[in-house]
Image 1 (cartoon, rainbow, N blue to C red):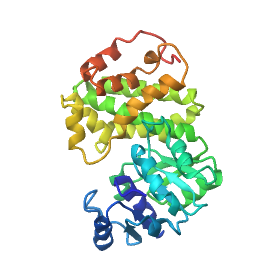
Image 2 (cartoon, rainbow, N blue to C red):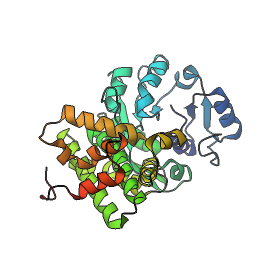
Image 3 (spheres, rainbow, N blue to C red):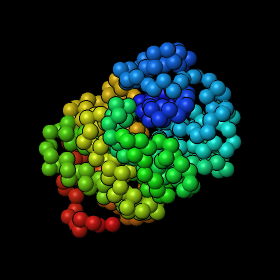
Image 4 (tube, rainbow, N blue to C red):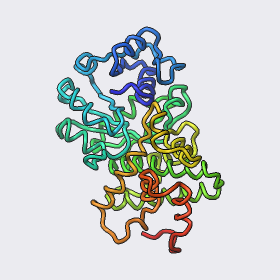
Length: 333
């Protein structure tokens, strides 16, 4: 479900293994072009999809006989999308989500949204890790992790998706996977700003490392395992998103650092930079759902990015503020 870059990438992963795969896209014209040319007219239009991948804009046709359902719709659009397709989902078909972030209206992670929209009777899994869609489609070596409360489902999905170039590991730490997937996009915005301001490698490395500390702090507060935050879905995905040239969030931050406005950047983008909405939702989530005094001192990068996006600080003011934080033990909790 979802015909954006990552939906195309996961369809390619399955299609290359000969798994019959149906892409559910919004437009009948796009579906027709995909079925005719095996290329998407808008996203990665130079990439050929495997012959075993077909497309449709009809939810009933796409979902009625599905064995597994892959959800690759951006978090902020997921609730409405799921409401429109839930009547077509087979009752026992498990859903694997590749969407990352926090819903701004409910402050829920994807697990919360899926259970609220589709019920708690089916199994869910969550895929994350350093995985740029284009590199997946090009067959570049990629490693991800699939987390689920249902261990058997995670193992089945790992077997189904893994190949010589795409390796899927498993985990039971759904909270850790979701926290890492949300926070890394916010850190990438900050890293992009740092680069856009021309602050150098020392500053960038320090910023990303401290950002991973905030990710770990939040994950532990919510019950995640530190090893998950240190793994593919946490630190691994953060490195890719902060330093990789294909990162939308890093590019957004870079343009902010160069002086462009949030509105101008948003109006020029054809894809979603999840970190923009997630940063604001994270501040509200942390404020409402975690305990502590001066939470802005515990999560200065997350709070700082939100302030910059809301126009309360310039990127330079925000990053200079980080350099004037109180001195303390590095592993302060």
